[in-house]
Image 1 (tube, rainbow, N blue to C red):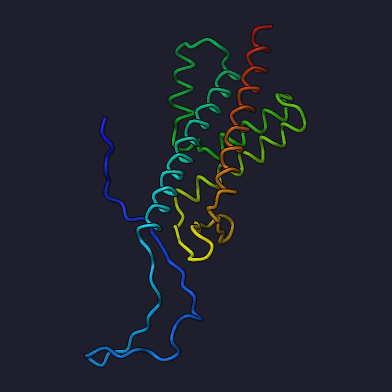
Image 2 (image 1 turned 180 degrees about the vertical axis):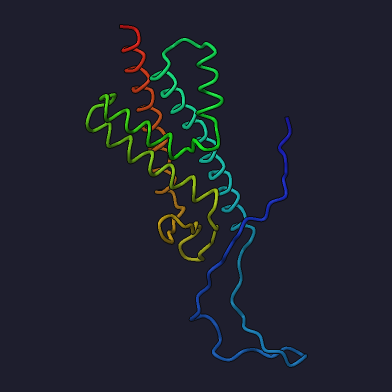
Length: 200
């Protein structure tokens, strides 16, 4: 299997230190003024951006997988284990319909967890926070603008209830891994609880 190369030019911004700029511009041979803003090592910066884009794609893919786990919980809760015509209709015509968004599925799942005590108190809060963070990150990487700061490194700006910025450092990536792992572990617990109730 080969690695594909698709045309994509992500929105990208680079910051610079204004204090390093000359107060007066240089003048080129045509008499045009210009300012020297410094240099960027696009070799090293390019590697960082490649890692960010790869990690962002993993976040989008992992969120899709998590959404399928939520769908499975909803199907099992409402229709049981029987994979019949009703199951297939509910899965394809209701859960996978464009009007049944990830946000709505997430909220429905959280309501089921709370209403029917599918998780313990602490786990309920962990699930709610994990899902909220994952949705925020998904939105950031689907709609945000990547940037590079010469002193702080990579970041992504996005809008969610106001302008926000995520600093894309190792602390952030470690938190991503922990949060996705927690969410999947909790979804497994929910599935086990639902399955146990169905088998009684």
